[in-house]
Image (cartoon, rainbow, N blue to C red; front, side, top):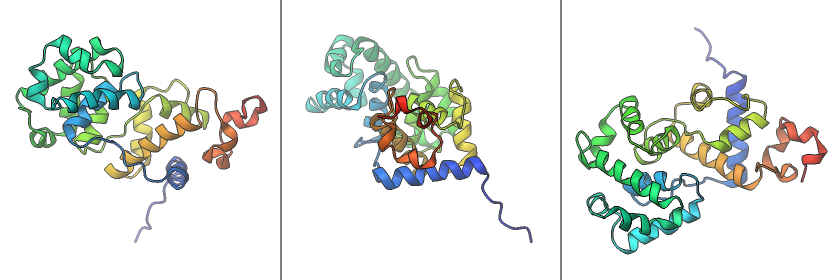
Amino acid sequence: MPGKRLPDKNSRILLEIYRILRSHFGYRHWWPGQTPFEVMIGAILTQNTSWANVEKAIGNLKQRNLLDPQKMAGLELNELALLIKPSGYFNQKALKLKAFLDFFLAPPVSGSIKKMRKIPLEKMRQCLLGVKGIGPETADSILLYALNKPVFVVDAYTRRILSRLGLVPEKTSYEDLQKFFEQNLPKSIRLYNDYHAQLVELGKTYCRKKPLCKNCPLAILKRCKFQANPEFIF
């Protein structure tokens, strides 16, 4: 009887990275949205801004009881833009939200999260990518965090961290970086969910553009290219 296949080198290092980060930061409980619809709106608003700004914009919508697809769709474009102003690029994002709402309220979704979840992952991903203003990262955030689909979300932090650890080239494409995770990790929604959140926290706290290597929890791996250069140890 053949033995159980052991994980390869990339699988081992990715799981070790997650173990270290989980131990350091704790479970991240991400995404901080009360409903799947709120998560989807947040995924669009968070483009090119901090989550603190997104929370202010969502707070404005909630305060006026407008975090509802039908009510939001009924707003004039300038009204919506004013409400989401704290998120930045508010005129562009208002257009993106309107485009998403048109998609969400029309068949085959028809305003139903349940129907949305029943659509196969790849088909739904292509549908989302067809909405003006939704790129791969936003689409995958919606798929994973709002629809509970097993897709790994990649962002600038992911690329920065893995390239500094020597696991991928610095200019690896979104698709190739996503495949690197999905091919080397167990296919687990919960793992994908928290792993992405751990990398975001690491990127914000330690693995910044100007890295804080001395206190980084991953320094123990001795893989980061900056560790060999004292100029970058802060």
